[in-house]
Image (cartoon, rainbow, N blue to C red; front, side):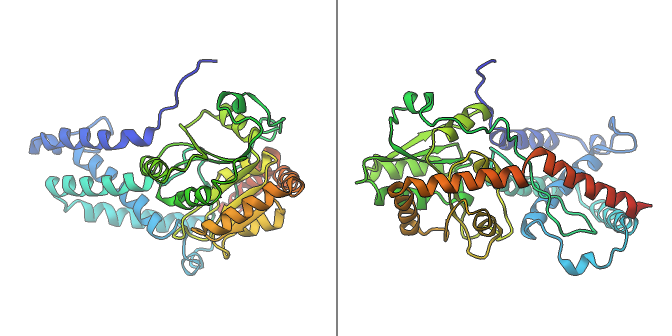
Length: 353
């Protein structure tokens, strides 16, 4: 296998948008309205479509990616829903025709920056992908490859390469951005810095990473190791070398958000400490599975105390990890999840008929 460093495609977005705007800025009026390889679409039509995609992403983010329950009651069949969407799309087409090329450029510049801000909050290890259907409120989770997540002895090459020895390793892996609010993790590590056997492993990249590293240096927090984004195989090995997995979210995260990495953490057989709302779906899942502790976002003291509990009594963490693994096999395996998808697809076909 080639040892290829992962490319964080999100970081390419600003340069791609700038190149697009530079190209469009130099078009003549005739070129804006000239035909493209998309039959019946001019250059301006294509640009309007790109702008619509930005607006779609930003509006769904604003609405927390949920359709208000009151609106779904209007649709008794898939056909009525599709007709409604097509009518709204046509309204947009007619409205956007009035935009001048310069207005489109200004809008693309603005929405490009806002969309980039959104993409930076998306977890780059796994993406939450609950699927919504007009006729069902059930969320269909991502599945996890149970076989590739088989738990192994934690004393693997990861501990050797990063000189972790037999320390108690607390790991976070994923995007390091505002949505994860890792400041509370840094503060918890600072609280526990006198506990020489406890070490924090923060794996990933993001727009908050540099400021967190600077804070660690400034406050002389020596029990934190930062690692860059890792390929999936190495990430699983890191989980195997871990004693406790962290799942922090900011207090602004919608309570229905369930990060796609949660099934992977549960399948790893390691206990989880989540910094999440006490009213959220993540807390409900972890409590139902009995696979970890939950503290409120930003509660560094609560996080540190939870870590100390697991550090002080390894049997608690072992039992929680086993519970999480069993829950993942029951709820998040490929066979279980694909069966759920199949049932929903059959239902949608019935509605169309």
